[in-house]
Image (cartoon, protein in one colour):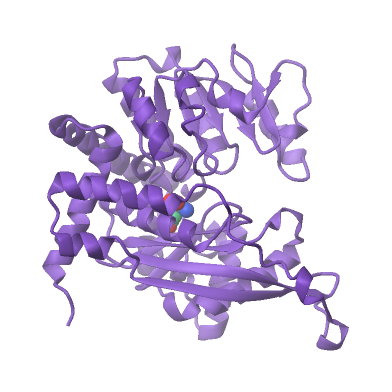
Length: 440
Ligand code: GLU
């Protein structure tokens, strides 16, 4: 039961959990650095370049949460809208201790490029709360989500900015967001958010969409390389919503999944992992972790060993900056498909390129999620819902078309896929800015 105000005990100020920004290498520097490179290659108008170098809007909010023990803790929350040139802003919300303004700005910009590269009519946004939700109760997460939603609501809207799941958020969190907005608005407004449960306006196929999109582009890449799926081994870092579905779908396409990992460590079997048994163990673990798998048919490896294990395809599907200058030269995979946002630093990218490793960049490889978010939003707006086959077919059409577009463009420009995808995206956004003009 929610405590009344008289029951609330306030913690001493020194204990308030408002952490310092993470000292990690800055994702925003990576994003601006690659944008500058693309702008130079495109000969982009300096004024438009300057517009794209800064987000349109940055909102920082303070989110007080009454915890189950009655104490109040205050968390920092963010919503950043990078660009609305091509349509309403779109992007996920993450709950993670490392969330900070620069990270959210970077992820918002990447959403702008992602939506442009796959040709869906959105700009880019991102949000998050600097919090470790793993030890929190569902009631605490619900209260935090509802308060955060109310705090950022002034800049949200189905035609303004539409959130979605990201790291440590899920359909239930989206349901609380939609319910909060609907309750405050006095009307059903499910189209305010995507990635909702199917029973309240979500789309069939959304949950698997990011992993499915990653699997589809992996299939296209291997086709380009003349490689058989059945002779391809895969390692997946991150066994959450992206990595676990990518692994399962690639296995159903014929690939051998030899290694997977999450925060609790990794599992390796060169003959292929028993994903069904692993999924059952993960479902039974209180924190849904691979640590729950205790069978003896695998070697236990750490995340570093996963990244450098002997496979054809590596799918980093965890957090940013996992592939860095200090491990890029030890990566043995010939192909990298970026399931996560920003998993590779710029230094590591240069090392991989010099070693001939082909990288399918995040803004293409993990776009399947936002593509089906778009399909969900379309279904919500017309109040007419499609069968899963229809959703999957549309997703496949968009991913295959986008992969081929990026592949052809990168080849013609003689640049790696990452730069090619970004140049294509920046060019499309710049065109929209030019068409609209600078208001007033
Ligand atoms: N969080 C996902 C991403 O980074 C999905 C965003 C969305 O569907 O709006 O692409």
